Amino acid sequence: MTDTASSPIAVSPAVSPREERIGFLLIFLSALMWSFGGAIARFIDAGDSWTVVFWRSVWAAAFLICFMIWRDGWHGTVRLFRGMGLPGLAVAFCFATASTSFVVALAYTTVANILLMQAGVPLLAALFAWVLFRERVALATWVAIAAVIAGVAIMVSESLDGAVSPIGDGLALLIAVMFSIATVITRRFAHVRMTPATCLGTMLAAAFAASQASQFGVSSSDMGFLFAFGVVNLGLGLAFFATGARLVPAAVAALLGTFEPILGPIWVWLIHSEVPSGRTILGGAVVVTALLVHIGLEFKRQARPVRPGVTGMPSPN
Image (cartoon, rainbow, N blue to C red; front, side, top):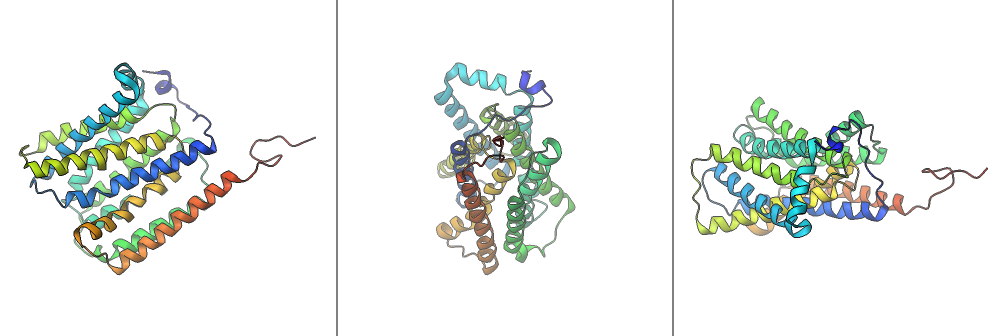
């Protein structure tokens, strides 16, 4: 166990405005990569969903390992796995649990319900960060979170009248809780590299899917899409997220992540000619507007010159 993992209080190192902007970009890119999931999945005809989960996780794990070896070398990659400690193991568990729970939840509830639960990730992340670590959440962030939840509620309201199982809703809530905890941990222990943790999470998901899958053979075309599903959608998205979430507040990271359920229907519409409903367009407009306004306010705040007596600068006597 590393000192980071054993220490009850780990303070995030100071992040410069430039690094925070890079964090904003990386989190957005992670949401962008994840948003292609629905469009890619529509091309796959593997039959058994656990087979899809298995190959997706395998390709994602392979990509993340290659990424770390390219970036840090063999010895550096080994050190990263050894040094991630309990925070890294917790993040790995969160990602593995969320990915497997998503598949099981689809058998009990609607995609709309799962999507609505995921919209609560920013609020849950903000609450966990505030309750556990007293990380301050700005009023503007709370307002943006409320707008995001309202917008996604509008998007999925048309399909909420289906039969819903408490088990499905419970698993959907578990997904949101796991992702929120992973976001907060990644931010709180910013000096711990979380890429190996996300890689371990994909390995755990693959191992669990292997125990549930009825078959592993797929067609060559399906394997091509599974490769994209794992490398581009999951692996690259996790790499962007694990790097960017270290640089921005947990609530903002989760807030930017909500671009995923907004962009996802757009790709399906453009690629598969599935036209979004009016409520989907309206809800998406509310969410995107809230996100853009909030990000604009954040950049304006960062660019504001520091005044004496404010943000730590001593006042002249």
